Length: 203
Image (cartoon, rainbow, N blue to C red; front, side, top):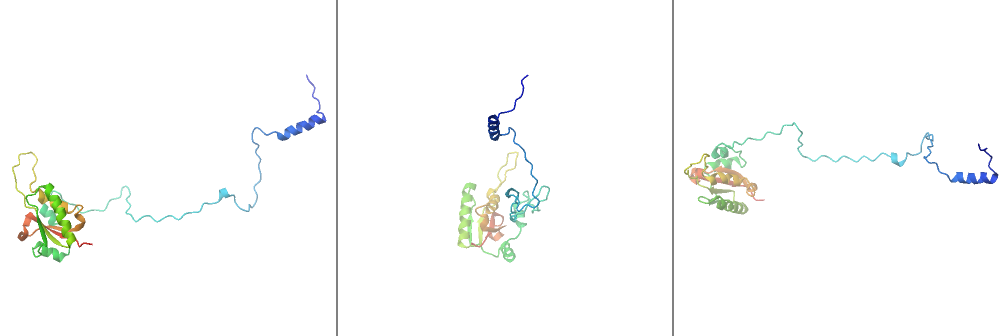
């Protein structure tokens, strides 16, 4: 068994020099008492500035389970004349009453009777847009009543296709924004085979 000996002065000096350059393998943890009253908190602990919440957009928000607003029901199975007669009056009531009694004279008219759907639709668009651009308020669209033909199939065939399509076209783009009211014409202007179309004022 070897005996330990004390270091000579030069060895002691060399050992201290080596010890000064040594680094611990596991970082040493030093605890320091917190200061009683810190002058200013560290930057990492500064509270972020609270940004103002922008106002919510003015939209009608809908939540799950919430009932939607009731809308007027449209009976698509009701006869066309009945649907037009019960439609809300959007034009001046006095002028509407005079119109359906045949007391107002149309300022222009178009006769689609005998045309196919492919021919009638563009002609109706051209006529309504031109009338609206001219400043006319009341125009007459003649469709004819349609003729009942032989029906040999299991599903009934609708006759008078233009009579049923024209009111629909008048409420769809590009004609919808120009049209204020659609009503079946008085007998003196064609009755069930024609429509009064009351146009909005051009902007």
